[in-house]
Image (cartoon, rainbow, N blue to C red; front, side, top):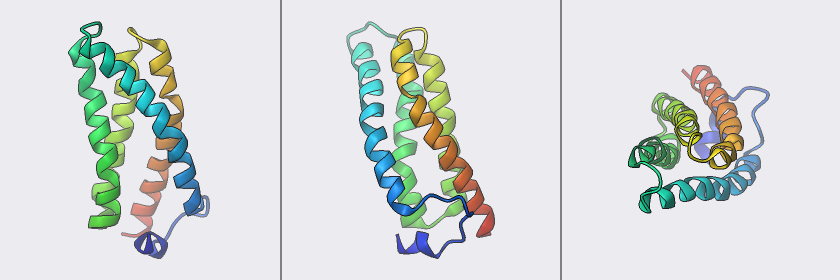
Length: 128
């Protein structure tokens, strides 16, 4: 977090503790929604193709922290968070015909990552 504290951030940037609180709420929702879909795919009730956006999203989400704070690569973190955002939308659209509840459950995740993407874009541009 020392690296993050040295970055120029927009005035509307949330305080660092907010990130932990929000992710603590979101991760159980994400696990429930994606876990339900994975369970249904494993049982053969949903098509395997639904796993494509789900798995890309999970990998990209997990990769963000090492990219941003380990590699300290703002541009790669920017690309990664855009991928996270796109795959949330893709997941929601793909899941919708099979489970509207699972799709809608991802809405808070979509809202937060939309904000996080705007924040990351701002930070990336401010720290060129």
